[in-house]
Length: 166
Image (tube, rainbow, N blue to C red; front, side, top):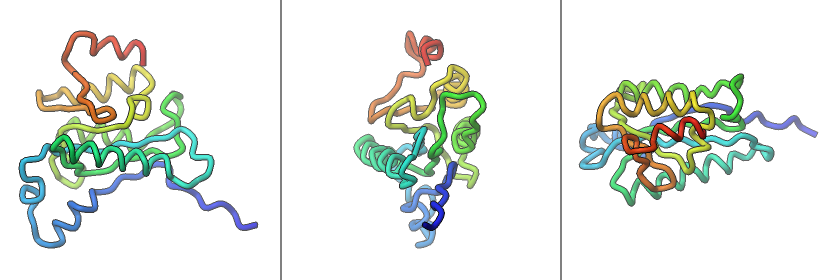
């Protein structure tokens, strides 16, 4: 029996439609038009089949929601087969996402002001991770978090309470 193929645990890439537009000679602004630039984050604790269907499905849902909400996914980030619940687990894609959102630029230089996830447990489980992503999103007043197609109020009453229940 051949050994199982190793699934990438953490990875990130520029949105394929953005990459195609740039290859055609369009600028980032031409591609973006009037949409808001965001990132898609997907994560799954255990990919037992090593098939990546869980993270693929999350990105597909984020793409559908982005189209409906007038958002443009600039970059995809994923931590596959890594739990967000344990302190000792390093989620490299999450760490890069926090850094990119905080500086409002993907590492490739494209503007990104928020992130999308299918459910908050995919993005964060521990209070410290919640605090990190919210701090990055709120360095300016343009940060947005979309969970399952709905805006999460980063500034409203009770937003800080989620950190204690995460």
